[in-house]
Image 1 (tube, one colour):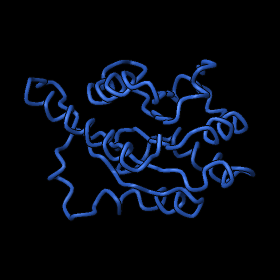
Image 2 (image 1 turned 180 degrees about the horizontal axis):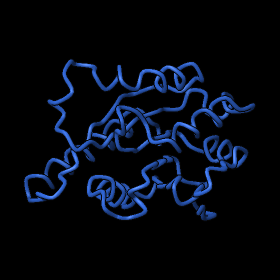
Image 3 (image 1 turned 135 degrees about the vertical axis):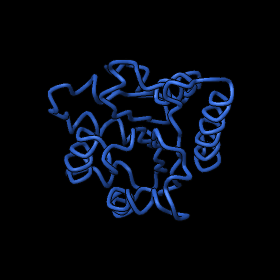
Length: 182
């Protein structure tokens, strides 16, 4: 649900993770809590807003037009984005007014995965896996600033895993803050 004050926040973090509703994804929950503490960030959960997969395109374009940066936060599922985020991209990114709303704004992807980053071989393996959404964003006028990989600690959550989550969150915020004039 969107609150009136959310329209004034500069960074839209769009979460797409069905498990976020069940509160069993530690990485997503950690990232959400971390960024909610920052006043210029607003977290929006597509799975709460669009349970029926009917996306309000006009509302989305309005929210994106007010943002200075857009972050997609999602788990890597079947080596791609969750179905609702895929539908969001296909519906909103191709709609009239989208390019004008997002032109010259920053775009970052934050991906959670159960596997450590080293499992994905190659320097740009995540970029290759997500190349279609990255290219669509670039073609729309968004400035792609990168991917932050967040390893989900699963059942063996400990202090070391919390440090890794904090480092990933700090990297995400630093990437945004250094690229966005707030």
